[in-house]
Length: 506
Ligand code: HEM
Image (cartoon, rainbow, N blue to C red; front, side, top):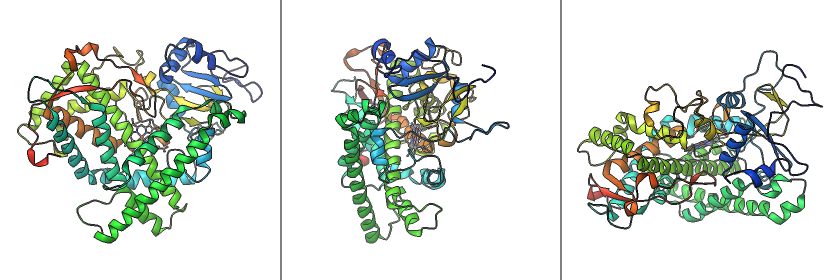
């Protein structure tokens, strides 16, 4: 072999753990991994094999995992090289695992899973320029402020006034409720009658897709897919979510007819899409199936991720009282005397933003981002990555790599103080939102919720650990799911420091 080596017959695959017939590298996970958490197990394997780009085979599925900033850049930000015939979009599609395929092939493709091509480009453009643009995100300000005040009021209603006695609240549950309500109001409109059913269906769908069943690893063994029954379940969830979307659309249209779009509510995302659907004239027609899929994507992409990040932020602040004190001092001194936090106040909260950044570094809600698929043979870091390989980027491992981060596992928001590194997709040692063509389009939407909610929690309340627990004793174990959340719920006692105005009690 020479130079970049490799040929179609003898590809120069990236290094990685040994592979057995049939099961490939699965045994490394089943027998040797010290953790069932995929991002941690893959990080251990990559380190052990000195493989910033690592090749694995899970059953029949070929997998490449990027675990260094350079490998991530090559995967996410592909540029057409001058003497290179490779297509620069070879890694800009997402794999359709067999469990999902059944639903996808019925026209359920929105933005998240659309293959790179005309439909994806159009949905992406609409999302970035219209649905999730800075202007649209600003237009939901009242929704966010309203929901943040409700959260404060409901916490205050159950909080002791001093000392931290009382039952404690499940902070994660409250955070999921607030991000869900904001996203629901922004995306489908406030009064969605079948909210609980919708949430259950989205959660179940996410769980099935994130599960990656045996049938997904051995797609040619149809019998496994048959017994796991995942495809059938995914089809059923798809049918259910689409039926719920029909209901949301009917509700929306009735409301519009009644109120001829009252001034009080800004146009929600569903309204914008229905308008575009009716107006037509787009390169790829925006069918109702596409509208529904996109709404489901925005909703499921939007609320869990922000809530998970907020829950980790509160967990880290509880474990690091110095950072908590600093963040609270900032918000209380900037807001002095105000009844509640508004978005005008957020501009001054520099440390709060550093807290969110540091949380995203240590706890990216999607530690392996969302998978990409290699749609044609391509080269990454000089290695051959065969067509059909699923490509993951371990943003979690990269964010904790001691080569790039001092005291990498410590929570130190100050490390971002000089403003040199940001999550906007150009600093590849910090990519919680991904980078390149398929980078998260909901970043501004997420930042707006996260900053306001965190500032509200820190402004009105002091927080105490239950049962006299020491900060260092707070368990930080993770759990796999659609996002990587805390394994154990975070229970804390809120103690009111700045009263929540009574007129906004829930
Ligand atoms: C803390 C909050 C969030 C995090 C950490 C996050 C993270 C991510 C990541 C890692 C990706 C994949 C990027 C890639 O493949 O390079 C992604 C994609 C996506 N996100 Fe987010 N996200 C968040 C919030 C949101 C919100 C609020 C929305 C919408 C309301 C949203 C909608 C999407 C969509 C539609 C995609 C798919 C884009 C495409 O494939 O072209 N996300 N997000």
